[in-house]
Image (cartoon, rainbow, N blue to C red; front, top):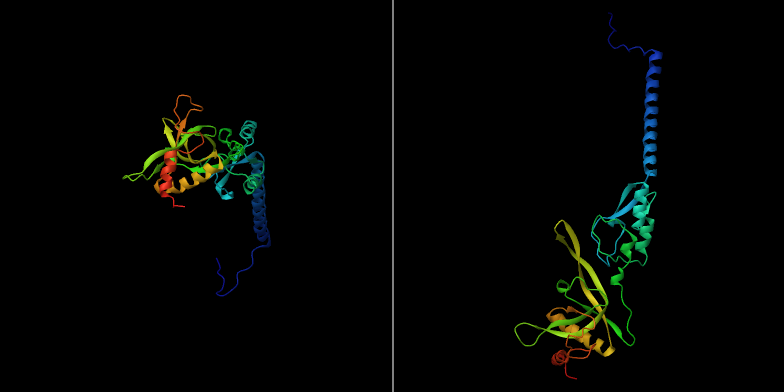
Length: 275
């Protein structure tokens, strides 16, 4: 077989061979494009067969502000049973994955009202205060005051409409403060709450609701006295409450309903500057 002289240029490939190579490349490009269009078509078909709900990415408590970074989008197969289920829950959902309705909710005056854990599907119910926790109206001639209470000692079933005794620790000259009843048989008109923790009960768990404030209605003079007492209590601790029965005829009340314990008023006078 003869060899080409050194330094010579090899002859060009046959014209027919070049056409084959170009055709093969063209076919490859077309195949890639067709496959790409097919994949996109499948994706579009899948997207058309599902809808989107939104789930929390973190724990949320009443009064929290949430933003778009606090939820994730979850695709759900567009089956009638799923759609009716989420509609029954009043969940936020959208056919094309838009979260505009949820964004509008949180940028308006809506407030998060119910404690929820990460992973919970976001529903309209989270923006609605539970009926049993709705504030009661202010009594005629009264003013409403809010008192901070010791959450770890608050009974879990506390709600507006219940009658309670209000107590607090006071410095009485001893080594430790003395807890005294301030008011008796007072009706709670509103509560401020948050979820403190999860409690395990066998194979189940429940949220433990803890309350950080209560609101009561008192006459203006008592409101001023309670404001002074609150400043004094802050030095020694927090208000505590004890739930009683409404209109309990058995209990003995030492002073008029809606008034402050006279012993507390006398003690308070010792700490006030002379006028």
